[in-house]
Image (cartoon, rainbow, N blue to C red; front, side):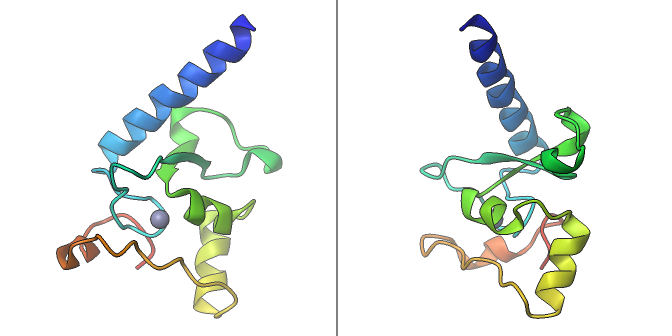
Length: 107
Ligand SMILES: [Zn+2]
């Protein structure tokens, strides 16, 4: 019980740190994660493939983007998008047009 709580609070801290570092943007699509959207913690090298649960290996993302990435690495995801096998989810409608700029994301 106690351990589960510790894990949960660590995850929340990691997410907050990533959100700050990424300027509130999703690391996968580069669009802002709006206040009503709960960011998820994505493992850059997937957990299922030996990626660590450390700050160096996590990034904040929309759940829909994380869901799309699945257990791929960012390089594999980028390749899948370039080859037309996958498409990044459309950004939410509330987003202002200027939000396309930013150093994060694949676009
Ligand atoms: Zn996203």
